Length: 119
Image 1: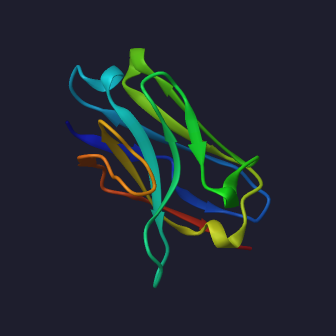
Image 2 (image 1 turned 90 degrees about the vertical axis):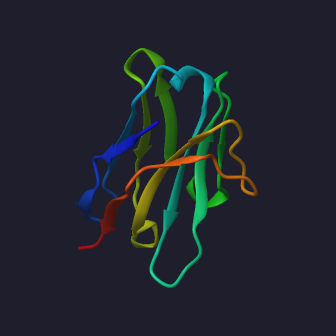
Image 3 (image 1 turned 30 degrees about the vertical axis):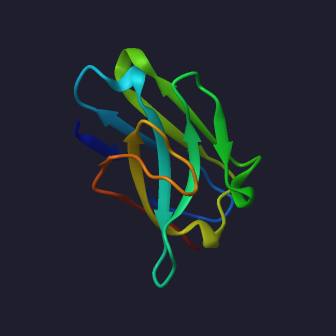
């Protein structure tokens, strides 16, 4: 399984971005998907995850601002990010696997996409 992210960039505080992650292969619908981020000098954290039944979970700091969704027909998972803050600045990684939680990562990783929130 290969994961390819897109959609990162530079945005002003309060702005929006949508990240996309397209997966290769035919097993996408049977995998949980997640978005992680890592800022310089900080540990990687799970931002949002979505199960094969489309149950979602979010880290507290993004609840109400970020939305994770999946389109199994397109083998793609999205992260809609609204009301962005400078502290959201990080490299965002797509992750796929059987189980994704704050304690367990999936097997497959994308290459990462930079999100910078700044004036």
